[in-house]
Length: 431
Image (cartoon, rainbow, N blue to C red; front, side, top):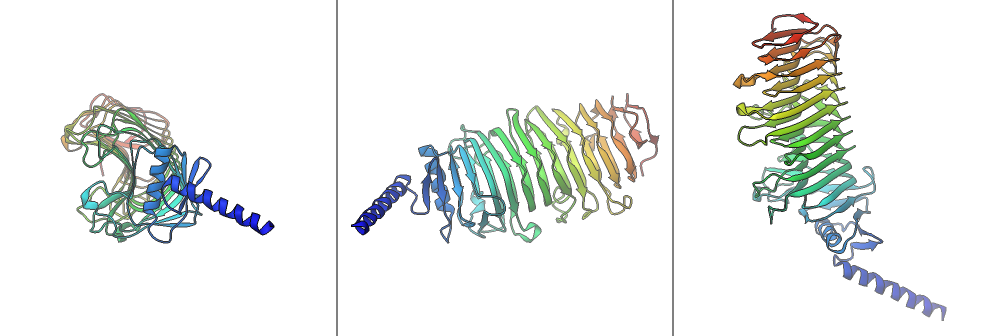
């Protein structure tokens, strides 16, 4: 009798489990645990199960999709529209997601590995993602992309977060151009994306780009407490109208030797670029409390560049404060670069930064090839006492700017400008 009761109970439990799997509609590798859907590894391509779980969570109101196995393999795109909730593993150390090589037709557009669109609170957290060359032929793609809806470009608001995720690539050994986390419009949509992007306490290694965004509508971007190692351009903002804060990161720059026809990559730490005819009218960027390490791979490296190309004039509110810049320890040998380079940008503050070691110049404020005036910059409370740069501050066509006292007696050159006040420092010719 007892055996019969146990058998009936077991059959009843199996029946409930089968019913639950059927209600979810994703097969035996996806199950329900309260308000979460659990995905276990299949031993093959886990992409379809993961996409099905995310779609089921969107349609049925589950708040999270959880990866419970130690390791997963992704051999197909995971694209979800309208998901709001968490995709999470157990931890960076205990959840490994490996992206298979050669599965994606990257030339078809919108072919990124994880693509989330039109979601009002998407979080990816607690996992390590390993990627090499996912494209069928050498091309470009992102590991995690937040975008507008490629099937309805009017749905262009997305709120994305990446928290405690490690993304590891193969750098120059990979055949594809691989980006870590991106947020911009779907490839077939012309209007810029709206919303927010947050990247927190994550690591980016051996990638062509780390975090790349182009957001309109003054969307908030927070990139905080991350580590970037051997990344072609760790942080790139292009033609953006966003309010961005870059806080407490460790950023290695000038650390990959790309070919000469890729002048942007392998040299920069942070690049904020606006291009004529493409950029919104305003932008805001705060860069605070970061550490920049020049790895001296190329002949020059630039920790931060804010650049408005083609003579475009926009209102870019820039504040660069409390950062540490480490250059060459033995002088400017092997580096002909710049710590902070401001080209064709007005109305900014550079304060309370520390500059250590050598470079060609730590600060450059100038008009670039267009020779447009650079106006109304304030350079105060910085520490140049440990600098061995060829020259600390170079003003080329800068006007109505102030270099304050008590900054370690920096060397400077002021050429073709007007109305500048350099209150303390040693004037010298440009080396």
